[in-house]
Length: 168
Image (tube, rainbow, N blue to C red; front, side):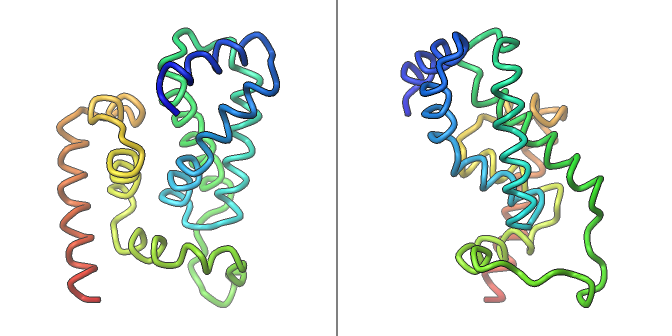
């Protein structure tokens, strides 16, 4: 979806056009999923965060001032919901108490294994930069970090991924 199409859909959605909003969100589902997995590392929690994000976006769409920043705005909402879920449900420390992975988890096993090899603080900037195409300055704004910190996290995350793939 190019930026002019997205702006047009955002403007229509802000006028409460449900079809435009649905199309807008469907165009970003894959990106939302990948960002949520980078933070939560769990299929069910990622789905919950995405669902909460869609609802929040619909309810708060009129607060978006500039349509061209929709993707950044939506991603920030998703990140906040992911962190809310993590605070509510701490990471399982003992494998015996963790639930079995779902069937859908198997399809994303390689992605999850690669993400799991990278320290948590490097995962999200890498996902946003490499998979979703955000600029360093946009990521810095979303994560409330200085741009140089984002650059450092990207470099360190690359090194960790390199080490992971060398071991494989």
